[in-house]
Image 1 (spheres, helix red, strand yellow):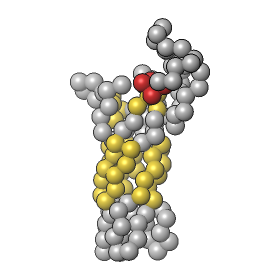
Image 2 (cartoon, helix red, strand yellow):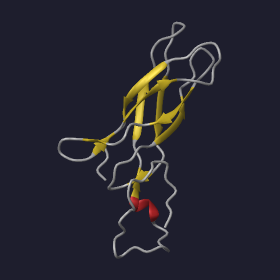
Image 3 (cartoon, one colour):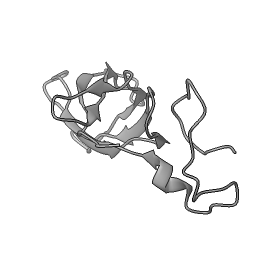
Length: 122
């Protein structure tokens, strides 16, 4: 069975005996994270951004791809996209991912961004 996910799989997904290859409810086997932040200042301004990662499989080591736009400031906006770190386990359960990079999409300058996604239990 194939799943439309961005993160890679290091082992096959172990399906519940109640699920089969015809299961239309594949999203119960994947998850996403939210992310939000503010870029560094460049050219006298910064940008805010918010987004949701692409799905990745539950129950195994993985990363997520992400892609969003910053909010408009000074008549322009930037693209934020990339791949997160592998899952980072949290005390008490769940996991998060680190992300970082430079904005693109505007030729005159760029901004650095970084942060952690929201914690997901799955």
